[in-house]
Image 1 (cartoon, rainbow, N blue to C red):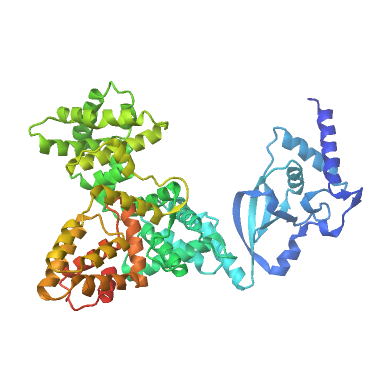
Image 2: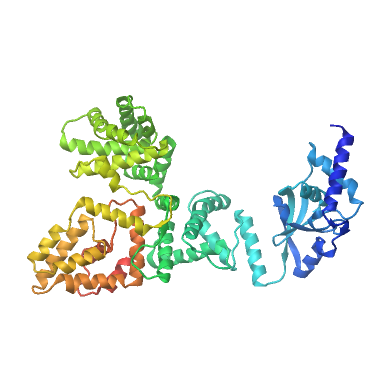
Length: 588
């Protein structure tokens, strides 16, 4: 392409751009003028400044000039023919291989003014660039209004952390900075800030917004401040530091303010569930002793696994991780690979070695109880025959991708082994009926938990049979007990059943003619469900029970019996009322 052609193209581009600033060939007037830096500087008394260095600045935020307002209109459209030669040369250089120096900009608040490079900004606007490299100097207002103080705090915060957060109230940037600085490890303050923003701030904001938590006419960052204030309250009053726990408790508090109910109203789907579990993982890792953290890092160097399994193994393995990995895990997995080589899809589950090893180990513990003196090879062969082959065959008829195949395989395997250990051998169809996927659609956690509980109770049958028999023998009100259990979702936890039986025995021994159901159980449950602080605590514990992967669904009945067990364990006097006992339990 010859030089004259390029020059002609540049002139045509200039004429076209200048034409945008006119209507029927007439300039549109003063309202299209660039902002003058000196006017804004004087208005805001913005004379103190700080050099920010090289940055990428959006062109939409460059609104004025320091010296060239007479040569350009709004949008940096040329209005003076003297500009044309320089403009065309810049156009040619920007389309060619010439490396132009960055422009120089002055910044006040969120607006930028050109000190050097007006022609480059003009051409970049014509070419529809989204941003431009610039050396930036920021000027600050000398006024001490709330808005100006807040902006200066934001500047200081941004310079320290390299995070661009908008907060309404002065003092809030210090709260965020303290939150970041309180993280252990993760390098210097900038590295910590990046980790905090990615792994704490962003997931929490997404979970809150998914649950409809918005602050009218406030900024996104203010939503996090509200959560942070609640977390500080929990730390000061209950010594609970976990982000995951504080988040769930905050959501329950807000929902209870809007509607008083014992139902867990937190909204969830598969993605939100994964975000909360990531937060929970972060909390568990931060609470580890250094020795366990070191083991976890060693384990991650050796293998990539599901976080629940890597946390589990880093905690339970007493020996050196590398020694355990090569003498135990690798040996077991290699035997499994050898014995399952005829089944091509077995390679999929081999990729998650920690989860597979845990399943094999769990199965062989069950197997050894039934058959003494068995070898690892025999146990693995039986696992392949009893678990792997039937599950592969069942899943092969489903139209699912490889990731979903692996996920479902381990869910079937885990449930099958669990029931085998409890003396129940049930079919895969029944296992699938018992398993409830959260799904991708939005629903409340209560819906999911209630369905899960219903299936658990259906499978386990009438686990309250022994309690009802005891109530009949002791002349207690069985019908009221059954009504209350139905009303409050009952229990599928055998530990709770044992506690209930003990309470009946103890009550009858001390009150021969009394009725435990009406005089104790019904009254305590009624008080529990009408204590707002206690109800919030229960709903949070219920959700966290689910996040921790506990095998039973947590109900108000389980919660009540945990409180009673706490009283007995700590030798608290029997005369104490349930409300006082509840607050002692919460703040224990």
